[in-house]
Length: 346
Image (cartoon, rainbow, N blue to C red; front, side):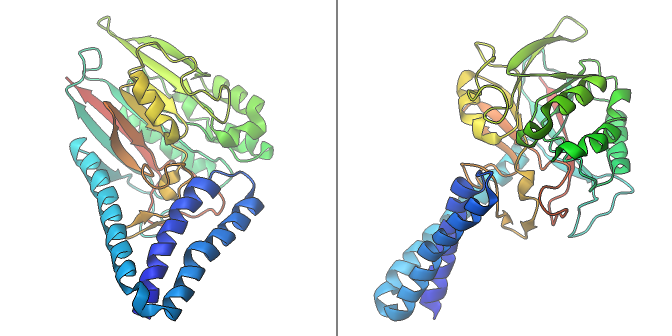
């Protein structure tokens, strides 16, 4: 029975990794569940039955696989912890928002400090928010709190990472939820990309964003001029969901200082181009997390490697936000909605 349990844990881990890579990125829910069920049979059910039949023969192999599993997970958690530590990350709950294990209506500000940057980034403060999913949960009044919190932070630049609604009929909710954005006046403006959910109502999303004073980066980059003559370059890509399927389309030749990408899957190619700081959403941090393990389900071809936090990808920094809203079920467990703040110092 113990051998079967070890095989179940190892098989479940392999299934989870492949389900994230091959199924969670599939927009067809029925096909996703069907493929997941077949993989569950192959990677969990069959190994467990085999372990019950040939217990002694599989005992050593099950131990080896279990040790490899523990090592793999330990390495992933260590990488995440190192990223938080190196960027001096700190999460602060916003007063007046609910909290606890179920945290759908909570709100936190996650701050990252990056030192040793160029003089043109010195003193820059950036607020990054993603995955709004304006579908009524949380309420539009809750998004008013998001904008007022950003206003209180006083960033030089505000960046939006996509997924503003879930269905065409959500456009009025998005319009109401974005009333507070129009009152922001950051020195370097508000810039946005679209996400995969925005495909269903692109015209409405673009109209509401522009009416709110937001510049949309459709596979292009902009040069933002700070007081003192410094220039900050910002690149945006919604690849592969909206626009070009090449995430480098419209990127500056040497890479941008800040790059907005809806999915962290684009990080390796953006890092190779030379983007210094890559900001992503899409994963919701898993939306439902577990103690120690964190997120289990993540829509990424890299599975849970970059589900949430900050990481080094080559010479670049990748920051993945847990986002604001909910997809599927209106529920967050141990994964708080957040505003990400990046502060740069030379």
